[in-house]
Image (cartoon, rainbow, N blue to C red):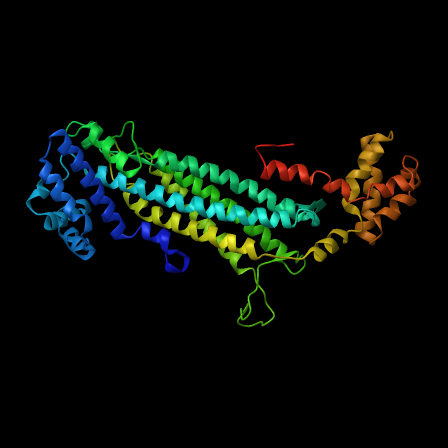
Length: 437
């Protein structure tokens, strides 16, 4: 991923230095287990570990790979240059996939830990702002059109619940991806003991793969990247909501515009939602990487490398991009500027039409058929749409309506409290799920 959308901690997981360090640890831990089993001399295992503090020369490994056309062999050749003759005991009974797949899964597990921390930060920001605006009344919209009143706190609580589910999914995906395979060619353990796999897995904080085919089954990776895609979709949903709310005609919320910031090279007045537009684009990138991960599941027989080029790209790119996006979204929410007065003005813009359902239901409870009640409410609502009339006044002046409801009863139906009466319940469901009302 380009530096513009990368954060150092996540990017470092995918650096060549980190990769080669993990490869070394896999080989060295395997050597320890082999020595314990008597497969290689104990002194050889000790000698291999002397490379623990070595700086692996990435340029040297790349130079060897250009000749041998094999990255793991290039690394092992360079390791032998550091370790000396005892390096002949490295990689006994192992195959390249044992190193590559175990390393890749460890990198994904470490990336997951950062992403989980990112989600924790985002959830904290969402909860804080949701509680701040728990009772800030605003209009809810369906199809982009005014529907019925809600609160801005409920909008943020909905996002919190969504990302809380994302956190659960990512925890499960991390557990599924954190496996280790040291099973040799075609996964039969013909030339290496399963005890070596168990030892390496334990040392790296992974779980032995129950059965591999020389490669770790890629359904695990398909699920992992699909979860990242879902999280990205949730990022886009919230970013899109903020973009809509920032439109000039709406202006109910706005990205923080810092001192000295410029919105347009041509129009000095502009304050554009550039961060959430950026998040929309980044979400598309992460989501696009789920499909090739699913296509990687179908490999030929016990192994091919059609998945390799895909994963060398999507592993770093998906995790680095999502890490950046979650951090950026957290910043947007943390500093989001909210305009309660504009929210109330927009709510009142349709002169009470948002209470139409309450009137409809009240009419049916007073004896009108649903069809008759709908017709009575709609014909008065259309006067408000078309003639800019006051909805309450029109209803109170309609003899057919007042034949069922008194003017006082109609007025009571316009009380906003009916729309906020269950906010506390909804907040407890979201933020205190263990003890719902």
